[in-house]
Length: 284
Image 1 (tube, helix red, strand yellow):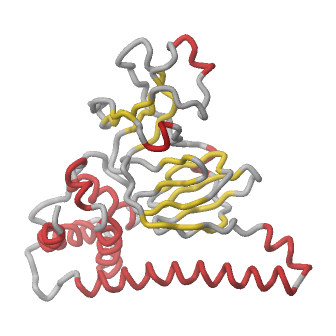
Image 2 (tube, helix red, strand yellow):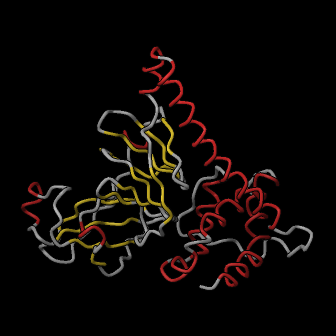
Image 3 (cartoon, helix red, strand yellow):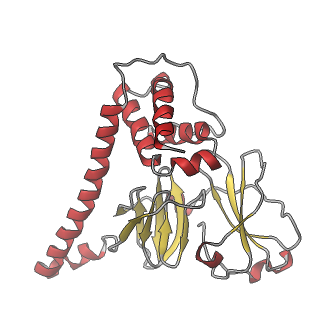
């Protein structure tokens, strides 16, 4: 979708998105900033999202989550909540959202520099340094799958890829991802690739349980499942084993793998063959 179509969507839905959040008790400034941050973060991948998703459903779910409200799976952006007001344009809020995003990235760079100085100058600071998240590389790359995935030491978010070796397990937690490394350290990875240490492990310790998936054939084995933004589940299938050999399928095996996305009502898409990383991907 051309950038002009994104602008038209922004202009058309801004009053309803902001008005609906305010109707749910969100303060006016917080509502506008939440909408601006979500739409700014999705702008680069807008073309793919409009082809593969019901953007009115996923955007509304993500905006509610950003504002701290419970998600309502399958519910689209409310229409006709508020009339268009030229005096209430999104431009200044998009600029503020962009400034906040840049500040987060600069904060990550500063933290890394301070940590290095402490390591070199203060030997007594070693324990503090060891508790910090490992250095990472971040590159911009639009995710070709509708879920976060991990392969060959790289975590693929919606718009960036974060090089973070030794992830033992991970799970989406709101707009971010929480991961446990093999060292036992827990880190939080934000949508822009910022990595910070975290003490919050509830999402890892008690992950949501996926609804039972009925295989297309007797050879399809569900390797992993992960929730999809806006509601529903993505199932990673392996067609190289019979269901009776489920225990023999390891996360590191490639086999013949495909991804199936199902709505919360278990209306499922056709299997999409995984070609990324030769199929050796993880969803959890």
